[in-house]
Image (cartoon, rainbow, N blue to C red; front, side, top):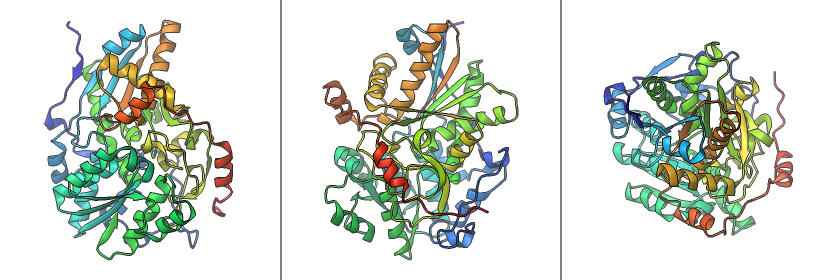
Length: 456
């Protein structure tokens, strides 16, 4: 039989429901707490920020949540996304491992982010919201929500982390092309932004600070809701279309993954891939399945953070979430993988890590770009700097197979292309890329500011 490189599904195979892991968790998630009372937040607490349907999804225990047909109709522009067998990478590595990658770079925004942006914009439109404020790191989320805003006629205001805003102007232009307003964070548009600019006029920004600005913008405008591109349960829920499709495609290939690898900043892309598979591990069908979350050594929340309640933003405007955190005031170094610079992590991923169901590794910037170039020269795709972190670990696992002579199936969550990251690749190729050290002292200082919570 002739070898097959692409495994393609038909539009009729687009999932009709999102998979909700909360129905199958061995232990329930810790509650989200109100920062003022320390008690679990209620739906009423969240209505100034989110439409009610998303609030319901955030806490739902239903295993399957139906995808609205209007959302599926837009999904058809790029879904189902292809699954590739990386024959050329396998040959370059001379490994007996079988490497597969699920490629989300074919969406109009070039990443996985529209999977939830379209859904969030739909529910906001349904509730009559005319304006949404949000933050973005590398710009993938901001451009995706800008796209969704264009489709549903919603005004979008994006606070983009300053280091990425200046390094990646074409992401900003993409947002503007779709009708969104994009400003660098910290910005003079909010109290939180002005306070940081007064303290440090050259502040590179952080996702925590950009979230503060977007939340402040939301609560000071009656016609505005807030939208988050990662971390929260409903965001991970929407991304499960990736893993649901991938399970069918792996069946087409006649294989099941031994190892699943993906990058994590807030965690939505990789969780969207592995949650439909981890159900098999929880049920005992695939007990040896390994799931590896890869983060940068410059922002090592799972590998070096503390599992504790913390704010999701720098200005302490959000509810308290139990997660691996480096401290809400942590200001990360301006690495090129701007989407991985968040101080915390999705509670679902943190909870699964606590239960011993997933692993985590941290990688240095230069090593990840080396892996990205290897991938580009074999598979042809220039990947996002974020994705390169996962590629690095996938290559490492494939090389371990070369050493042992054992063949394993490695499934890579490929979150998007790097077509707007050429300056980052130029820095690597010219030998000018900085490899930031593990910021131990900065983390220790930020962790001193963790909120004092009495857990009942």
